[in-house]
Length: 243
Image (cartoon, helix red, strand yellow):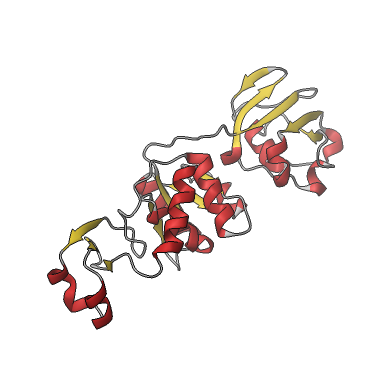
């Protein structure tokens, strides 16, 4: 907001406990206490909320002086604002996602349980937004900057420092329908049953001797079977189904 903040009346903003992690200390005071932000009568409530560090993708209801308000509301001096976290589960339609380059393991695990999860190792921010918008996919990221881009139709900040926590957070927030073992973890394509004769040329001799049941990706042709690694993957699937 332009000009000296001393020139403008002040708005009091309290954010939900779940959103405290986003607050900028230098902009919004001490965590756990209301922030007092100068308002210029032009900036919207959405802009003011993001100015304290909270992306609007993480915001549920906005309450001004005890009444619901839209992000386009223009705050006035003396307004008391309460920022609620987005309600869980959040149910986009359809349940489709695109993940940024830092969430590759989460993308593979989502595919493992049958969730449509697009992912590329070299997509930049503009490409991610274009892919999200074109396919009506929720952009999953830990980059707060991209979540504040006005052109993005829907995004979400993924919580957690490690893949297991990040995976659990996505399942908790969106509760997507699960269909384990139906998607290719390599390309996100759908799997179809395949006979041993059909996939035999792609198999190593040991695999050919030891396994009888196979599936193959309809898009990239990758072949799957329940091998020695299936115990670890079963544990990932079981944890998702139990949620």
